[in-house]
Length: 233
Image (cartoon, rainbow, N blue to C red):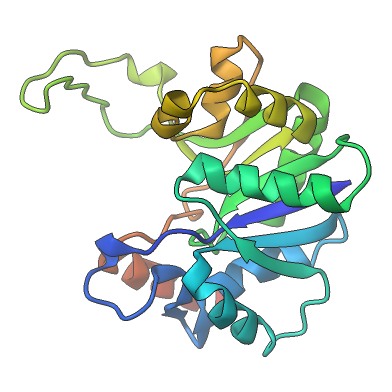
């Protein structure tokens, strides 16, 4: 079975002085989170859509979702870190569904413009390869600085990509790799795909889209509203 993990655990500190996390801010006439869930709920591929949110925002999220006709969405508590939030989603699946032969599609709650094409390709690639990441070619030169003061490397741009989401995996493999990390490693790991890379496992690339933006800063929300207006025209 296929499961979507909507990662809504961030508090949105880079969005500025808002009274609620960025995933609950309005994009057009409804919250960003609702736009994102709708992209997944309209597809028949998912057994369940699991929204992972901070403990103090669970009731708020449930009340918000009750205003919409979602019939396969559940809200649970996320973790302190991104990777631990993904693990919470996996544990929910393993506690409520038989075996571990499942596909998990993990997606940022604040990427509301993900396309159905991208989602479906993620599912298929996770089945075929075990793991995949949604990316777009880097258009700017990438500069590395290990001390945050001086350039230490400028990689060849032809080989550079910008990561987006979804990131999708076979649950059994992802859970196995996660459970074999020690606590220090879990604290340092910021990307689930890196688990596969560290274990010399293939991570297939799915072509993303420049419109699949992550709404992080106030400017991003302005851009997102412009994109939404273009979609609605």
